[in-house]
Image 1 (tube, rainbow, N blue to C red):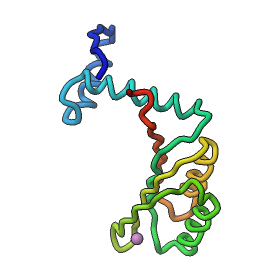
Image 2: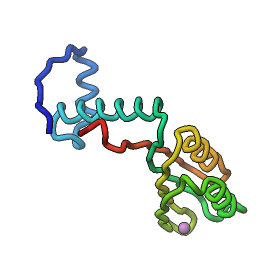
Image 3: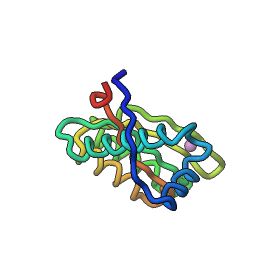
Image 4: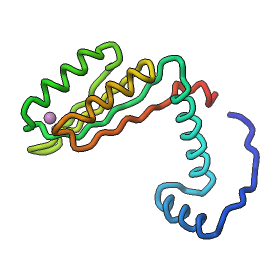
Length: 138
Ligand code: NI
């Protein structure tokens, strides 16, 4: 672990109160919340400017009764078979399925594949989260 440095940040009282309310119950202290925000920003920048492969997860909530949806989802995954690494499927309720996919590949391809799945009729919510290979946090 690298050396920890204490630093001061000037911030409007109103904004800080909003932030404290936001992190209440999630973070044990303000420093950890700010560190997480900084890490997220670093990961985001890494991903946007990455020339190599990126890795992340795509979470999809969908209605499995939607006509043709399962086939369309499979077709897209086979079209991008080199980037879809693993799936976790949960039969959430009578109507809905939750699927989490691990995807790895060139940023543009990952984004295209994710958007084509998220955009399918019957997909109620979709979120692509790009993570990091950890090189920036050594
Ligand atoms: Ni299911």
